[in-house]
Image (tube, rainbow, N blue to C red; front, side, top):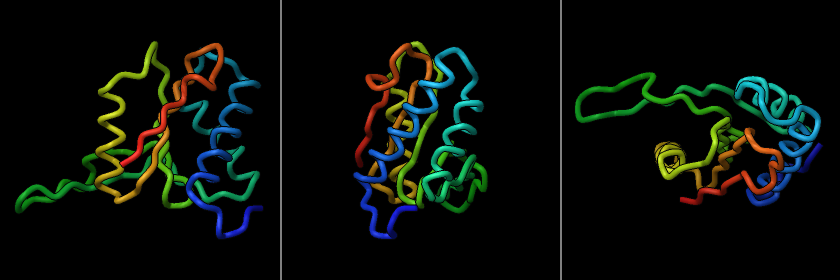
Length: 128
C-alpha cells in the first residue's frame, strides 16, 4: 500500500509500471476492456483507488447532458487513463484526454496504446 501523500508524478510512474506488467503478461492484440480490467487489478494490488467507466456530465447553456462522456479510468481521483488499441495515438486522442482533464479539473492523464510490441514507447502523457 502507498502512503496518502503519493504525488501525481509518482502515481503516473506506478500506473505505467503496472501497465507494463499487464502488457508483459498479455502482449498486444486483445480488447481495450481486457487490458483495462487487468490494469485495474494490478493497480488495486498496490493499494490504489481505481474508478472505471466514469460518466462525465456536460453543461451547455441551460441544458445538462448527464452522460456526455465516459472516462476509461480515474486513478486516485486525479490521474485519468485512456486505454486504446489503435495503430497510432493521434491528435484526436490527445484532444479527447485534454477535454476530460479540463472538465474534471485534473492536471495529468495518460493515453495507453496497448496495440504495440513494446508498451513503453506507446504511452503518452497529456498535461493540462
